[in-house]
Image (cartoon, one colour):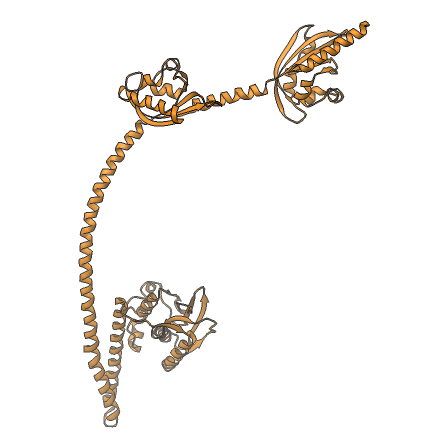
Length: 519
């Protein structure tokens, strides 16, 4: 074998050995050309030796961060033969992954040239494990509960700062004792039972009293968990310890509050029972009052209306039979008697109607109604009255469905509102307009006049009983001040609405709602 063959054989053996090493190994010259780029280095970086030599500047590719690049290569030109430069840094793989490595470079003379022999030790997993350990330590230290870690036989492995604070011992002191030694004597059996239960069932929860270093006792909540390895053998026990002093205080407060509430409940039940008796008596009295009221209405209806009917009938008879035998003054007197008697009869009828509505005695026969037909009938009845005032009665278009209502009460609504509109319209060019439109499930009827309007101070009282905006007009034309009150009661009985818009000198518009008829 020639010398060159021996050198070649040794080089091949060296490369074979380097390929088996579980670290990245490179041998490069000062220009960055790699003579050796072992198999593990290819696995570590994802690059082959050919790719590393052909990329131009492999250092920049491997270390995109200038700081990492300086850690790895900074000062290499200044170290002597056999000197070593070592740094912990990060590299970027061909796949874009970041690896944590320790880079160790030694200067050697190889084939008469200054060369750099570099080893890359991958510590990514170790760094990750270290970070996980640090993270767990941070979590343990940040816990607001105490944590006491024991081995399988009960020796202390670790405690967190909250446990030190809880018992008043330093970490060094706690590491030399066990939870049994900080348990109140009366609860020692509870501690041993918790440990036994955790061994048998994997987890155990309970409450007991602990003893601080200064001898004071504190109530504790304990949660013990047993940790098993892959073979099912218990290796550690974690005891989470919480100070429940405030909880116990709150429980005492809650017990006190519960007792107070129980007492208050009993007192309230007595008051409710007493009030119920009072309400029952008031209800009985009210029923009696309603009976008296019904009796009064019946008597009033009979005792007042009966003689009035006779007076009206006799007055009409005398006026008709003896008209040619009476003087003008006598005829005028009879006319006044008849007019006042009719006015009194109307007042009595309206008072009785309001009383029935108040008492819920008014019977409504709810049927399908044609509003336009009712309007036409009402205007026909009031036409002679409107002609006395030179007031025109008009109807706007009615594109609405049938409504559900009681014929007499809806007719009364229309009659009262149109009658009011006529009385309070202008003396010249007065007009009352009736219209209706559909809004959702309701028909909105509007009665509008161009009369005197309602002043602001009267608007809040307009639906009050016996209230009249202009009492002189009402007296002159037979008004009682009950018409709008009756309208309000009727609409309320339908669970509807009645409202108005008005401006002094321009007129008033009254609106009321009626439900559409559903078959």
